[in-house]
Image (tube, rainbow, N blue to C red; front, top):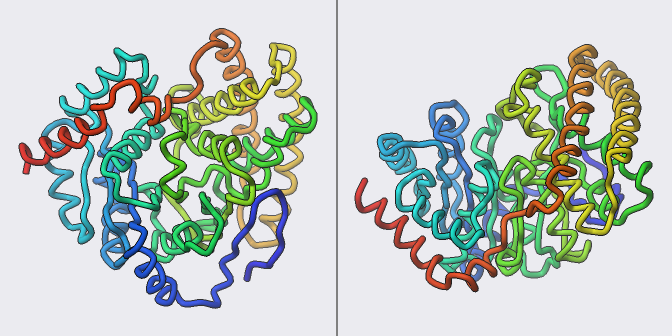
Length: 406
């Protein structure tokens, strides 16, 4: 059972298992009558062919408080979009499928490109950004949650715990972030959080000195969790990365726009597992290798925007400090695994750390070569100011896709 320990600058809400999900669901249904609740599901077409998403749909069909589900569909041609519409037709809540690769949504993106407001590259962040824009265009939801489509241990309890802190009007929270232990099949998972983000934040503090921003990020027990919920009024001014730096980018925006008292993390499960990415040491454009570069870039750009001077010498110091701290943490993880009867492959852990250390420098080089690159996608307030008709036209584009393909 979790303890009541609080640390860091944000509130931690625990999963004490002393209250039934049925009670929480009843309350959420009451809240949802007054303050509509939407869910965003960013999805690759390939995830429709996996084992996790059908089970997620079954669980979502038991949830009575959702107003609408917005599915962002990436990497799908026309036939695959048609299949996706049939696939998601099993959902009982109202739902929409945004076909990002369809000609109508591409036309919306071309308008954004002409205004230099389009997401700079494909990725999860771009998917979520368009789904947020669509949700804002509908102007009906007071609360929006996001979670991934590859959670193999998914249950509706996770969603209820994630949403409750921001759906309850008596709570002060504008954003909640999910966390959970990453243990499955007798071993520790969550390599990027454990072996990159945690020691990198420590290294950044040591090299750069105290930073409120770094303390804020360090308060989160699982900063790369893909599950978060927000009250809608904060969404129009939120800027996020278009790539795999999405989770760090959202936390960065929460730090910039909200007080720590308006942010919480909530333990949504004591059993969590999802599809695991390959390390992809040979290809920096794929897998955890690309993810680690994107995360580092998001951190560097935010630090630079906050006035931190970064140079090649600084990045070398960060890399060296990170490497030592990450290796020390592997010792701790090994001991923690041993005492809990888990297996930990030290060679695989150190191989990952070596890759991440190299990518810390690679991300720094990318930053230095293009320091003026816009770090995040422009927010929807700016998009609406630049093209007041675009959000309405996006609603029409999604409707036209639905009418054409059934």
